[in-house]
Image (cartoon, rainbow, N blue to C red; front, side, top):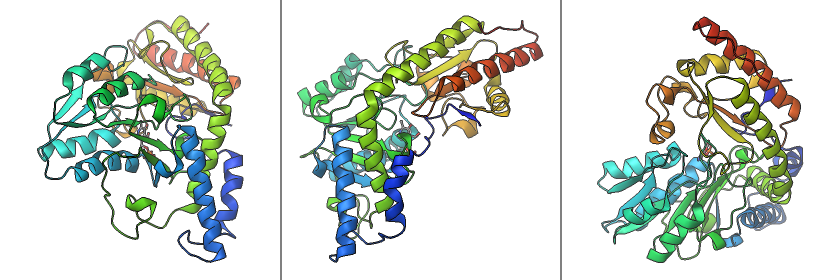
Length: 391
Ligand code: PLP
């Protein structure tokens, strides 16, 4: 069996989630908008999922808008704000380390004349609240900063950033696709107006995600149709996938604390042995303020070799990622996240991302350590460097 350590890309469906979804994929095919019994039962499944999803992030069920992906939720947050503001000059603030699902709609708006401020991050991969304070203008109408970065796993100071926005009356969006279900989030206590999350990152299915829209946040739809999801995301609901998201959110909320403890122990064993055993290895970003099961590494002298390292690990039955899954097909390009952290373009090409989930075991980590040691040594020998040893 493969050792799968790429949970930041996508996670294995939890069998409890599959059990929730199966009846809705077969016997229960009703449309939730239909008034008959079968329709009402589909509606019940959607509303149960809404309550469970809301509970994961401290929202009211009525504040959850289901979408088909985290990308769609991010686009709805940013372009939906733009649509609500149509005709008013406004200013948008985001960060240089966002996922393309946020970067690209912001760039799209910038090309159409909306001024955008791109907040930098430090070498620790964190966006500084003071930078946000300095960037705000009287006409700022949205700030979007992710809750945890998909390349480094570094957790952002969401509560501090949101508090600055609350002070100034500016809606704050956070892309919590990597963070939700792994670290505690509470839209009310954190002061977040818009929050995106996605089922396939928390052992749910692909095809279901949500944008949490706090009451009173200006947002207009990007799709027009039958008025589902409070008119913000019309389409016949993907009932099985939405029910899967709800179940995945429920399990994540219940098991978050124990899982975090377990994954931090696995991650720390990995980090310590990689740093001690592979010469030139360094951890990307803040040492502690990171997702429990997420670590990104750079290997000095192997900068150009990250894709070769990944393929060698794959051959040895270990799945990890270079940088992020979305950028994996462009591994020859420097990562915008690493560049924002101050790495030169050569080093910014060489990251290896290890991310764990509920089904990651200690033997998986041991297998990665052995395979990584061997692959790095082979590649280094090819590059005429000394053979490293994992202790
Ligand atoms: N935002 C972040 C931080 C992500 O890591 C991802 C996916 O990798 C997305 C957004 C996009 O989510 P989805 O794959 O559900 O479209």
